[in-house]
Length: 190
Image 1 (tube, rainbow, N blue to C red):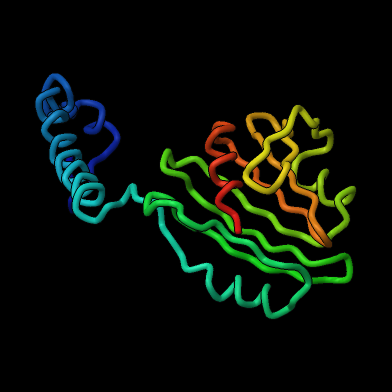
Image 2: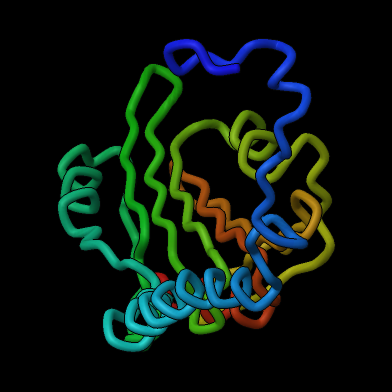
């Protein structure tokens, strides 16, 4: 019995449930079409980003102002890579000077997209090495370029490093790339 649009409890028990089909109204085909409507535009946007906008290309920055700041401070002679190809990219550049010393850091991406960091510092080597190469770096050999002898180190897991002790500074080249690439980078410093 219906009273002013209300159903009494006796009538609710006899009312038949409303169904929309075997699967609640959605077939596998409907779900596949819904997913396709979402996936196709996402795939097109991803292709546009990668192919047209060079979305996978490393972002480069100009290290000039940071290098100038380090040179103006005149704490040590600043070196930078010379003659590397256009497929090398500078991604970070920082200069920090405090009571312990001064440190210049330049982060690069090599042609194989592996990171390499150049660290030039007046911080004492005994303090600098554990910070930059891990708590237990091990010297494993040497590398000699045209004018300098570098010490080769096994740094943190997966990292190789080259270390140069120079007048009033320590230069470290560290990265996850192969040793030959690190040597090429270190030899380009002038």
